[in-house]
Image 1 (cartoon, protein in one colour):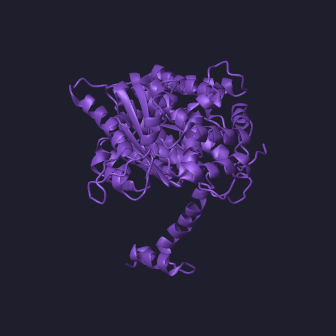
Image 2 (cartoon, helix red, strand yellow; image 1 turned 90 degrees about the vertical axis):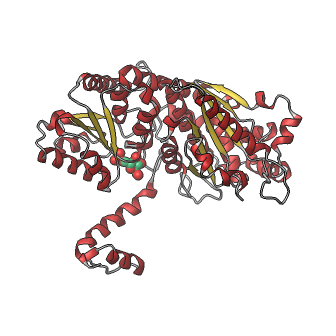
Image 3 (cartoon, protein in one colour; image 1 turned 120 degrees about the horizontal axis):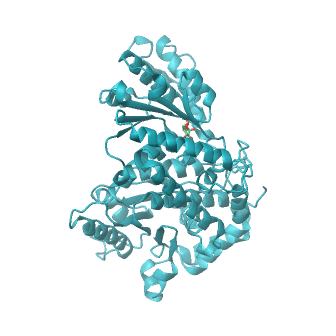
Length: 515
Ligand code: F6P
């Protein structure tokens, strides 16, 4: 669908003017002083997630302009096109339907039956593996979306994981990773899951081949019982020799695939019921995104705020600080979700954009980050919006810790905003540094599902307003092609046609056998 791009709208010009007149000098402390209701005005409840947006550099008129921008760029129509199964991933000519993977059985979509058949089969398999005491180790071999999602969720839901099974995630072609896992497992008690949407990815196929060779060399019997494939390319998996396969569809983007068969490690870890709760949590957020008016629509408000920060304040990054150690892989997961989706410099029609797109997304769990890079967040020369994620109920019973953890999260957000006066001194904190604060009541499959879907739709929102295709990833192709070429040169040492630096480094790294 042809929609106006953000920089072609009247709202964009309005926002430019607003930024010049009041945005640039906006002061959070004054905003709270002038509006006793600011917390109420800028906080919001969505399924499973409470969000306090009040410590952000926005006021009601700015939000109104941002909402006007969303309307002028036809965000709602574009969202509805996604939920109607239109081929909105136009550079790959594909629909975008990861939301269908978590929709109820009776969803009005032609693929719903196949989705639920696969889900039922995959969950039945997961339950069999859970009941099979002889399997003690599950090794997921996959990369990018075929690794980060399941890995993040298995870690996040460790409190719900059944005992008696260990989970390992091997992604890197660097065999130090696979080797370390293979030393800790035995063929007879290991299930390998080869997870790859395409079943062609270099890292995954190399690791899968090595794992199968190791399995056979170490007396492993019955590849069919010890290997399963999670892929859209079932034929290639069969050719590889894997009989147990769970499929999915080209309309599931890699970074949106944890809800599909790619979620099998999660289902084995938390069980079929837990996996269905994860899906239900995400589905509740889908409904919120689909039906709430834009002004009370949390992913929309967040996505618009991201645009305000990136294109008007020109902030280049955003830091995510989960104050729950089980969410330790969330920043890495969000990096792929946001940076692979929105790291584009041409719009969906291939025209160069005149504005900034994806920021750098990064972070570490609190309180660890406080003792590493928070110095820079408080006193560095760049302003970096921080996102705190706190969970009210801990999953442990050790007294005293959780209050300290939460107090630290609150204190950091407060310190970033308030600052401290000591003009010219080393102890001066400028303050007025923005943050968003999310609260989950507890970290459960349902709340995690909702949180992830919230991020997905937020990324959708900013990508839609920017007018880019958030569902392709052509930027990963060039490096892949060049790596193929260089890999061949390692044996021969042939450096012809290479730039001097690459040639020199190839030789230095042993290309052609000559250091
Ligand atoms: O890095 C590019 C990418 O295509 C990601 O989008 C994807 O998640 C990853 O590679 C793995 O791809 P596959 O699941 O096909 O092995």
